[in-house]
Length: 111
Length: 115
Image (cartoon, rainbow over all chains, first blue to last red; front, side):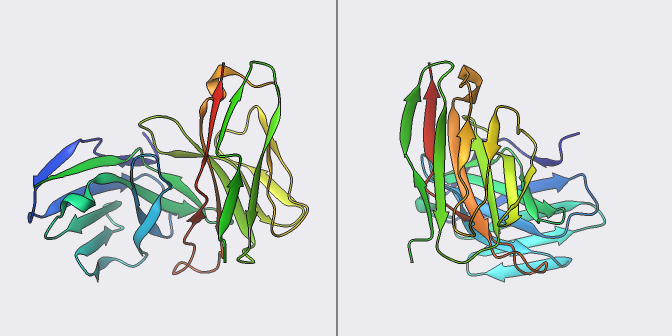
């Protein structure tokens, strides 16, 4: 079992729709959970992080964490073509809080 | 504030050559990391450091070495380059701290091809 698993996609949604991205993790000792967006040929950029069970909202983005189910998700409301990118889920573990990344989900928002 | 600066951005190596990827940060972060990203894949941790003089292996350390003589710099050394090391390398830094911190700040990446 991979430490962090994501639906590989690709995922396509029409403009204005809700995009739902999912991630599961295997280590119950994982502390914090991050969503990064990566455009082709660019470095990852942080969208948001969550470390408590429940929902966390930031603009059009909502992260959801369920530690009992070892599941974290990202919802993108009112999806825009500019949201088209690869979304990386990452979890922290270890004393140096090193991140372990999933393989990413490629999202395409169709105009 | 330049953030995290990586050099070079592109490099082509021949099999068996060696080189150093440079990484510097000006945010006074204690934690620094090197990741590699193969096409269509996520990032895999090569080495990390929690402070000057302290380094440790990540998931895929074979074929690489690091040093951390200052807080600012964290170079990655490739010895005897192999085609399997063809990848994009990202250096990152972090303040560390509690569960509500730990955001990684990434450099722009170094694209390495070994032929």
